[in-house]
Amino acid sequence: MSLRYAILGLLSQRSGSGYDLLKRFEGSLAHVWPATQSQVYSELSKLADGKFIEVVGQGTRHRTDYAITAAGREELRSWLAEPVIDHPRSASLLQVFLLSETSPEVAKAHFEALRAAAAAQAEELRHLEETVTWDDSAADRYGRLVLRYGILRAEADARWAEECLVTP
Amino acid sequence: MSLRYAILGLLSQRSGSGYDLLKRFEGSLAHVWPATQSQVYSELSKLADGKFIEVVGQGTRHRTDYAITAAGREELRSWLAEPVIDHPRSASLLQVFLLSETSPEVAKAHFEALRAAAAAQAEELRHLEETVTWDDSAADRYGRLVLRYGILRAEADARWAEECLVTP
DNA sequence: GGGACCATGTAAGTTGTTACATGATTAG
DNA sequence: CTAATCATGTAACAACTTACATGGTCCC
Image (cartoon, rainbow over all chains, first blue to last red; front, side, top):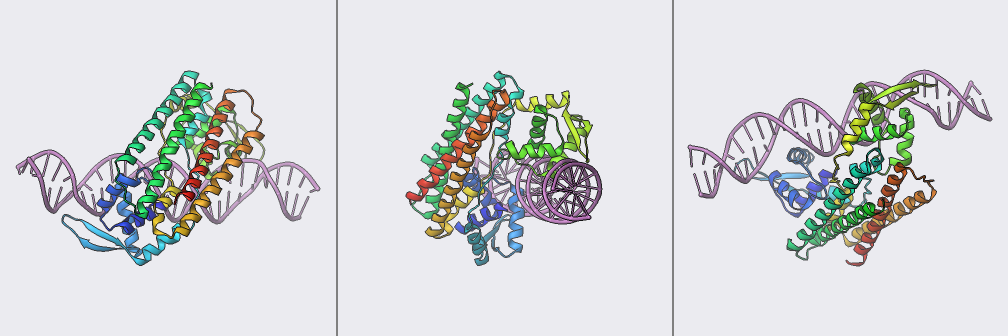
């Protein structure tokens, strides 16, 4: 259900085509709510059917630009009014939970892999934080908070994995 | 795909019926990999078809007990040999990302809700840590590490939400 | 005998993944 | 002209959710 709102949110910042949205997903939302090409296009069709977005222009190639409608903005706002609490699944933690089925060596390799992945992620996000040119719009302010969350989390994950390595 | 391994993992610790497994999901795996009743039963059928588990007894009512087979253990181990790296979606962070569409009041309420939820989660997990009677088996050792992860994460989430509240 | 709990199953619908297919335009 | 990129769409499948349906057994 959230993809719908991710798209409405991006379109409310700026109109664009499915292709545009995909690029913008990659650039900013990839770490929060990844979406595939086929998903984006089919969701756009549904949103257009429901009058939450509308076609505002046909460009070159088969490009179709969409803009959010008043109804779409309302839909987005009403979703944002109710904070969602995640209960994410974690295949990674599931593996840790079951590590007793393997040897201590495999377990050690496991934590090392987790530590490395978390450290790389933290590094990637810190780099992103430095290279993005932030303006002082509200959108960017919240974007920064999300990015900061990602960094803190990745750093905490790396510390935890390290702890697991040393306390056997 | 992970549900398969969650079930194999639980069955490798102890044989049991679908109903048993559901209870054990609630008790321990709920925060890592929740599963519904219908999912568990249909996955059990598939695993039995593939000879990864086998029926070891019919109890009273329609109870059917399963045990993991050698092939099942091998399947589980080969999954554990390759660390999985999560890229979880977060509807909650998506909302934060889009908060510029709302008023500062809604945004504030949002962070307060996130803080409260994270604090409650941390409290719940700390309580769990204290009440569970741990033995010094390998399984329990890893279970504790996972629980510790959950606590650290919930605490970090709460701190982050607080930070967001004070730095507007 | 009736309510609580044990125990399994099915069916419909949604969301997400992967792969394939097609065509248009631009840059070199 | 041809390779890269732009741009959209469809089809098949896997995973997950929700709801409904059914029956057995225990205990008061």
